[in-house]
Length: 150
Ligand SMILES: [Zn+2]
Image (tube, rainbow, N blue to C red; front, top):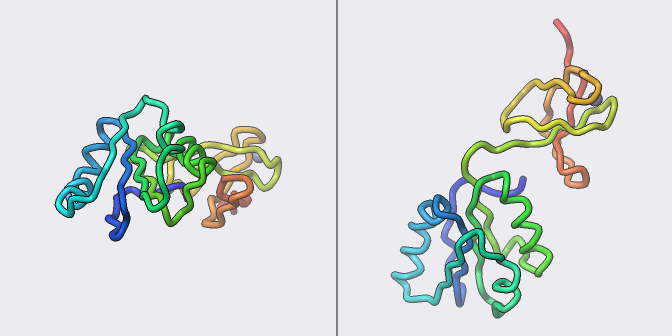
């Protein structure tokens, strides 16, 4: 799991940071509204501006929201995590079509599919796979088992 599809307002922070593209800003609008209502400082940076220098210069106690298309979210999340934002200090919201990786139990190859897919064919060895709920954070993929052919 790399993120959520709806932002949630987390109270009690000194400052709120928002990094998003245009569509992402619309999704974050209700959260920004809450922050402004409480007159807590906030900063907004729009994609494609580089988030790293900005994030590095923030003080402790800030809370970060990143909202962008799913395919870009994972990379941005790793940027924020590298800088030192923990799960408690940041929220990652994705929109659009979410894709996941399936780890093939036979050839160990990865196949990209749309999220919620139940059956897939391995791109590498053509094995028919049944997609499990078992997520491997090591491989950043869901495990695929041999599908029972009926
Ligand atoms: Zn395979």
